[in-house]
Image (tube, rainbow over all chains, first blue to last red; front, side):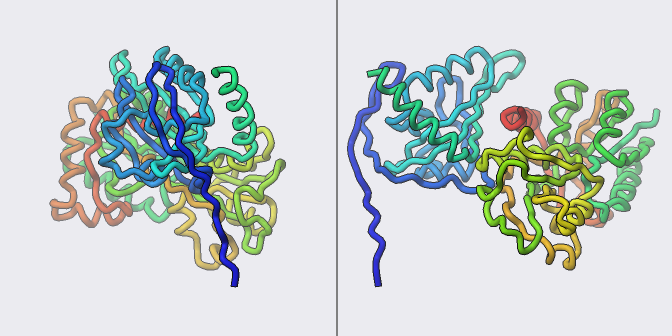
Length: 158
Length: 248
């Protein structure tokens, strides 16, 4: 009888956010597949602090709902994601426009999952009151293109 | 003044009589005349909406956005613990076992149900499929979607989950579910239009009190709805925001 051995490469790295702040995180080279047929939904306030999330968000992030609510959305930021992607996200939303893109998200345990994310401003009586983000399952072709693209962007940012 | 109520054309045929019973109940409770007009398809219904012929509608979430933003409708209630989910099915015995097995040129059969089609196309994205690299045949009903699949005229079919579940056992045995959405946040809502503005709260009260009324539970049962729950303005705005992220 043979036993499968899953090698988990663990390392600690520093994430530099586009606002100039930074944080140390542990990352694992282990992808968690996006669940079929589900949407991950969350809402934030104008500052990007999470105010609502659905069960799929909780399941995929690895955090409990209590741990998530009140945290900045950057809690999911994976160090392989270029700062420019998030700057583009926030610049687009602040213009009251819809943003979409492929994102590698960090789970609490350091593993990751890819999503196709769409974010929109919640406009009430002409004012932005917060933001809603919905993620869906991306194709492997798109993920592979983004792995290369984001690696190049990261090199340019160094 | 008489008012007109309609129901999203994707309602189950089993509940046609139920909507007439509901309309009679509503008229007695509100003491106003309401005519129930049922349309065969979404196109006919949208023309009636565009002509301002509709005052009360049990609306598909796809149309709810348009009704609220462009026609000043207000959501008053929604069925409790209910959401619109889509199923992608194949013919039993098909070589296709996963979404990722589907290739360019996939033949889709579906109805004109807009939110089911939206959810169905989203679930094809992991296979890099879209409107441009697939072909779609539109038929009039979900039993006809099943028939086209069984006859081999299409590779996959889109269904509203409750319509799939209500197919006969004989038909379902000839089909296999490839994927069932678990979105939870998209659902039909009861919307009241501007001509009924002074009755919005009364309509909401009638719907929310149906379980406590002597005849209410029987009427709910005939609609296939367990009860109505309140739909606040922000609930509707949130659903519209969600639809905006999913459309286009």
